[in-house]
Length: 220
View: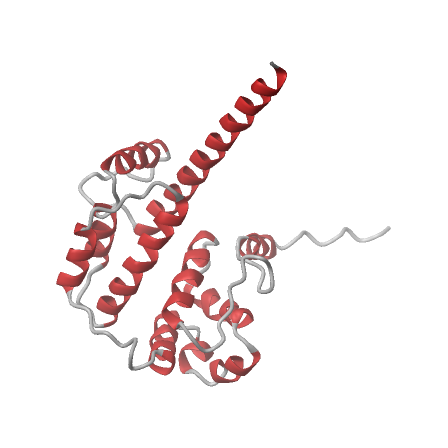
């Protein structure tokens, strides 16, 4: 009698599911670090890692595939990479790859001025620009322990404009039970997740209406 097949390891499926949400290193939406623009790379990588629900250790392991061959040799000797400490690894990467021209020391007032701007986020590309610029400033502040997680989430939410977009996102967040405790600001990653879906949906509906309109005219 043949022995029964071993049960599939659920951890393997979870791991593959997480990685399936990450961009292919050589795909159209290319995400690759070649020694320049470290802040932009880290911002984009963390964006995808949050969507993929990667753990801190997994972020350290998977970031390697997005490094150019030359930079992989540097990565291999960094303590944060070896120990799987993502916070430490980010600090080391910034120290190594941030040029003197890029090393601006931000103050909390810089973030306050940033969110006070009258942003007009109408498309996903507008939101991505807002999110990226916010993370450049907030990451600098967090590295020096001058910005708490509470304040980061509060500032990020407050800066989203127009207010009609923020109102629409609030409805979506409540419908998905992401915002239950109204005494606390929403985690930034939840806002990003819902905003991406919401703005993508709006673009699709607009495109769909235009197609129907053209179809109707062609039948006349």
